[in-house]
Length: 190
Image 1 (cartoon, rainbow, N blue to C red):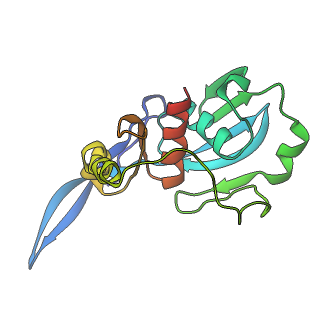
Image 2 (cartoon, rainbow, N blue to C red):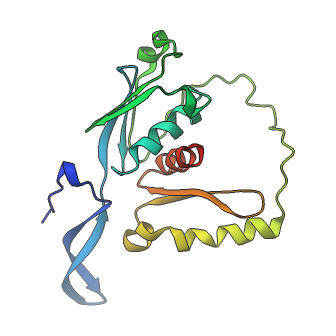
């Protein structure tokens, strides 16, 4: 039996009736299952992407997506954002709209598309930031603590952004790992 989901009250999980098997015994169980919905991201009113996403933190997602895809460099470039389900329309006056319609993409929670060239991808990144290995190991311990929906369902990905001393900058969960990354980046930028 499928649970109904009201668009105006988006949740992260819904209960489903299922049959649990334990050795040779079957029993009725209720399991929490992750919700995913299609969301349309528009840039200056032009369709940019249709994504399968956990339907929460859409503003954070939009900021992170636009920065991670290289469409904007800063959230300050965004003049307005309107979320009118299932559309997220972002207005960026400085963006050249001629590029948008040429590469509208559709993403499911299991695939990633990227607009990029191969130029410079073979060059190593350079940074003055260093992180001690003990800090890295310390930070990995937070995944199990912060991934609450994953603990309930086993069906989400969690992204955590730390500073170089191990402080949590932001984190997000989503059914798609690329979406959890965009949401965490968007939160950090905001």
